[in-house]
Length: 83
Image (cartoon, rainbow, N blue to C red; front, side, top):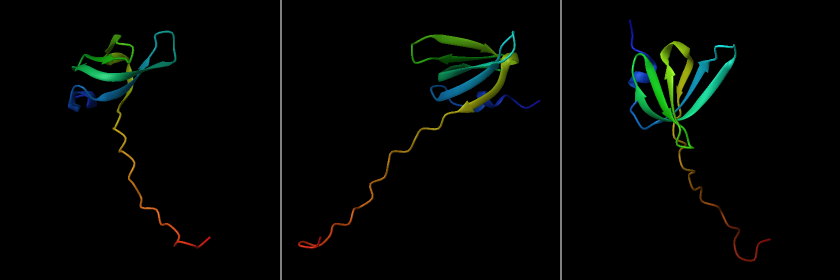
């Protein structure tokens, strides 16, 4: 059986985990991956809260790729005196 995708991610990356709620529906956890095993994922939220999510509840797991810094595009300037 292949290992869960979250076990291939390095600790410390930002992730989003969608879990199934017992009463129906879903809830998302977004934060830093602190622990990843076949049985559980631990995500530290921005507030500092650590949420342990059982693998059986995970519906979707995504790695949040860092956004590349904007590139500077040289701007052309009109020649002096041109309007």
